[in-house]
Image 1 (cartoon, helix red, strand yellow):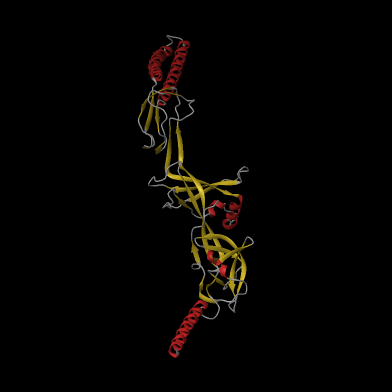
Image 2 (image 1 turned 135 degrees about the vertical axis):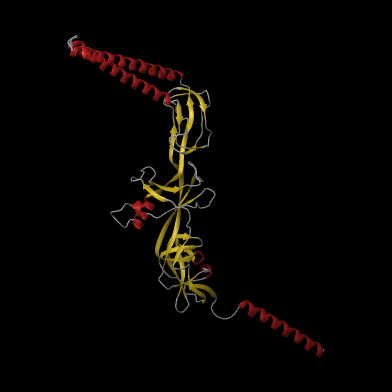
Length: 389
């Protein structure tokens, strides 16, 4: 019996020791709980705002006939690259060819009349000098010569006019570029009053990207970049990037060339135009993309989004005091970059903030700081912001 009692006491002591160890493990080490802490520092941060853009060639030239007639030949296909002066269409112009031939024949007759009138004048001049014929006859002959020359000029003008009209039957490209759709076929009757052009030639050696800013965005850009009153805002704007439809960034930078001077009262926006080089003809007229516009935020703080929490529609962070107690502090967020917020106000240089686990903290709670590096990236950061809405 005594031996059983001893065995029971040993077992109980082991059980109590194990329970005590588990309880100690559950309670964890003594002292305030650890939280990651970083020191914030002011820096200049460049963010990007994206604006939907439509892309057009530098020139979009509509090819329209200047005469009425049937399409006799089409020398190109849709999407072809054509050079300036290249023949595109021929319109049947039999009547114009006949007119040109007739006016050319008129020139020959007028030239013959001039020659005959000149011979008459040359014949009469020596006779007048010898008083064989009267001066009046010579004056009449000279008048006939002037009339014949005038008729020759008129015939030449008529021929040139008919020849120009005949040239309208041959439609050539006024610029180098890519052809659009060709809605008409050989044999179709076309004329000067057609609603659709025969085709469109887009000069895409450079392209124009059109995008819009609302009044608030335009005002912000004016305040940031308009430093010289003698210069226009366009001259001071930075280069912009173009994000293509597949999400990739176009390799060439663009320059903003124009800003509409008026705000559209219906939409409350202003249109801007940026020009991009297109040496490989990768971009086509009618495409779409996004303009990536840089905005520099000076003397701001870059704070991890995990460091913030919301209360009453305000964003707050926990600032760590000298005694390692935390205090909630409201902050003004300008924009977001990747996993960080850009904070304009609410913090001071050198403040320590809790960077994660804010939902586990309370005002006045004491913590054990972990880390202590400067929050965010180096003194100047560049990243992409969310697209503008």
